Image (cartoon, rainbow, N blue to C red; front, top):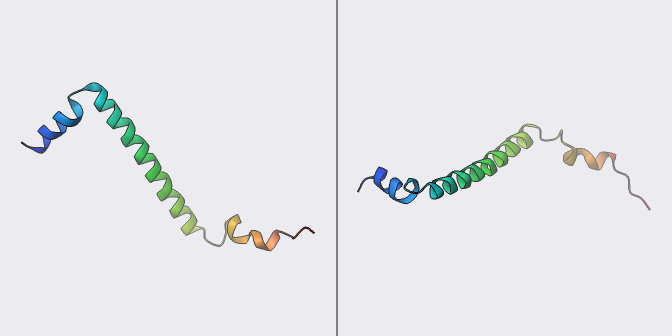
Amino acid sequence: MGLASLVYQGITKRTSTLVFTICVGALLFERGFDATADYLWETNNKGKLWKDIKHKYETEEE
C-alpha cells in the first residue's frame, strides 16, 4: 500500500474528514506562524520594546 493510498483511505475518502483535516491544519499553521513571527519580531527589536524599557519610565506610587 503506497502513501497515496493511505492518505486517500484515511483523509480524503470522506468529505467531512477532509474538511476537518483542512480546518485543523489551518489552525495549527496559524498558531505556528504567529508564534514564529512574534519570536522574530521580539528578537529583532530587543531593547526597543516597551517590556524592555518600561522600568525607566514607571514610577513607584506610594
